[in-house]
Length: 127
Image (tube, rainbow, N blue to C red):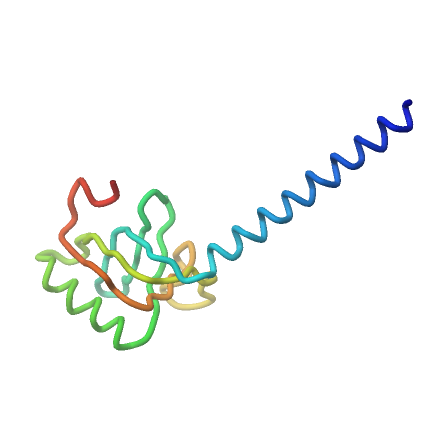
């Protein structure tokens, strides 16, 4: 009987470890796949950052030159002070931490494919 208990215990452990591995793999994909993201954006001298709703991490914004230019132009339309936050909804994906430049001071980078919406910051942004 003790032998069967050990076998069942081992099987349960194997299943648990397999589940953890699958969860880790699915989280990895969700961070690297293109997603629709909402959060707050700041642009300025040596600053180009995005803080997604519900997160404490801040990411450096990168992407095609024309997309970054659109973000900058729209940002200037919605702000009156340097480094003001605006609400931003984008299509993007998380990419690794930068190895050099100002971007390396942040938690990682977000590659922006497309901007859907930008507006002045409000209390209802991330609800």
